[in-house]
Amino acid sequence: MWDSVDARARDRERKREAVILTAARAFRQRGYHNTSLDDIARELSVTKPTVYHYVANKEQLLFECFRTGLGLIMAGFEEVCSSAGSARERLAYVMTRYAEALTSDFGWCMVQAENQDLSPAMSQKVKQLKSKIDQGIRRLLQEGIADGSIRPCDTKITAFALAGAMNWIAYWYKSGDSLTADEIARRFMDLFELGLQPR
Amino acid sequence: MWDSVDARARDRERKREAVILTAARAFRQRGYHNTSLDDIARELSVTKPTVYHYVANKEQLLFECFRTGLGLIMAGFEEVCSSAGSARERLAYVMTRYAEALTSDFGWCMVQAENQDLSPAMSQKVKQLKSKIDQGIRRLLQEGIADGSIRPCDTKITAFALAGAMNWIAYWYKSGDSLTADEIARRFMDLFELGLQPR
Image (cartoon, rainbow over all chains, first blue to last red; front, side, top):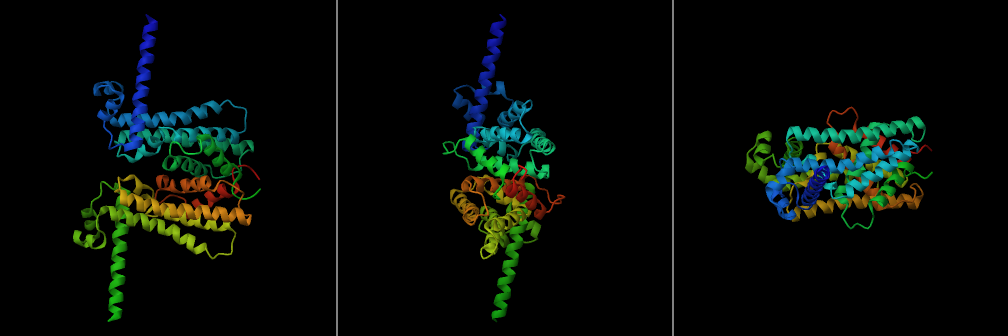
């Protein structure tokens, strides 16, 4: 009996993920305001009430897409938190996960969610999650300054520069681009770690 | 008689600039779709036909705001084109002008114009102007690699990283921020030129 409850929970989770992924792709392709929950339901070959079973409204669906994308970066922070590497090495790892997130189907929602006339409550939730990423980058920069792997710098402005370069990927990256997320991240870190000036 | 023609032309240009600046501020504060030409006319204490005297429609007004912002960066490229400095120094100067443009009233329009469901023709014009900035940055990077002031790098990806960090300023900068555009640019160039890794 417990097995079947587990199976149902897994099934529900799988379906929920399919709804979110389908929405992320639709928002990215057609824009948030040009996509309806009817469109999402049609693409999944389910009824609209089925979609409402997973999210209360379209805004919440956008938020779930946003949260899924940011979750990929948060996972990066968690993976390195017990790593033995220097803070600069840990930052480089997180930036690779960051690039992967931005080049994923969720990239568009990650940078565009805030531009969609969200309700004040939802806008606040988006800002809170973004702030966690920002705080995580600043913390790694501070740890790097402390362990000597990072030159002393203005951690707030440096974190903005790193996140800005990363977030902008969503504006220029096309799926099928000749570079993988990993290669983009490596070139970005080449700039961020070594700088333009010859060493 | 010619004097008065000149004076009229100057007057017309001044009024046109006032229309564009007022629109840029309104779009930034309330969003493009929440701002009407009526609002702009009211804020300028002129009639709507007066606004139509300068722009054909709201989309063109957004484009003029976009073009004015990008013009500030283009002016930076022109100012350094006969400079004796290394390409890296010229790039640093252009980046300072870039930061000034992004922190100006036109910053919002510069990064948000493309997100506003523009007509295909207008979208094309926006892309062409953006491409000029991108090409200008890549050219300075190539010149820097050639004159030895910049480490060999992937100029396309590096230009995207620099522009992304810059463009993102429009998302976090608040007028009245404790840092001036010049100070932000200096901290960004500290990262871009020297890198995070201690030298």
